[in-house]
Amino acid sequence: MRLPKIYGFLTKDMDTIEKTLQKSIQAEHPVLRDASTALLKAGGKRIRPVFVLLSCQIGDYDFEKIQKVAVTLELIHMATLVHDDVIDEAELRRGKPTTASQYGNRIAMYTGDFILARALEEITKIDDPRIHTLLSKTLVEVSIGEIEQIQFKYQWNQNFRDYLRRIKRKTALLIACSCKLGALVGGLSEQDANKMYRYGYNVGMSYQIIDDILDFTSTAKELGKPAGNDLLQGNITLPVLYAMEDQELRNQLVTLINSNQDIDEKTMQKLIACLKNTDAIQRSYAVSDLYLQKALKSLDGLKSSRAKKSLQDIATFIGKRRS
Image 1 (cartoon, rainbow, N blue to C red):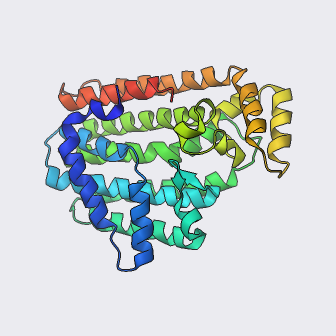
Image 2: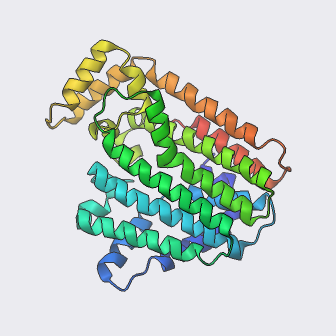
């Protein structure tokens, strides 16, 4: 089953959100407008708006109100992608040229700032201080995560806790925020809204771990970027941390990545094969599974509904992802 089928009943609302996203990124300056539009057309799973809508449907669903939150979260995510690609010097995202590779780093950064400003403009239409407080605190943490991602590049001595803290800020917090904001707009109690937050946090942690696994187990065509690209950029992910427990492989990996030489595809494939010959992939999946079980447990006590079933199915789908 493909992921969109799990929440197929949201198709009409998601189509409306897509149109609203297109409208919201229109800018008077043609470069900002073109760069933002290209990013939007590059596609994406739109999983954060989906979490917003499903979480709201656990309570009282008011689409006119909740779509503003859904659009805001996706715009914030888009802005972070632009900034990430600048930091990583990435040329491709989802198989298409990044904003930075098309327009240069300076325009890319301003494009990200513009999209973020549009996001904040959207959320001001909702008069609820709880929503603004949660969103602002989340953005602070995400910003810290951006800095940490730079600081930890090529830091081979980082540990398991460093990695978890980094992906928490990179991915999990924004998904957790999406779920709680949806719950708050849906009128759920603070207790149930916090359950949704924990669900989103744990799903987000699992989602990022699996993304980091797929960097080594998927093809360049499936990834939309070269396999092993995260490692080439100096990002030490969970599979790498586990693989480096083999001292010989660690020395080989560090020497190669630190050599400042262009690493061809054949060499990278050999390195990936060595990593896959360890138990790093299996152990990484095991950690992902732990987070998924916590996510499913977080939904206990919430009333049964089509939305709750979809949230459970999404978690299960993420856990089974192998491409």
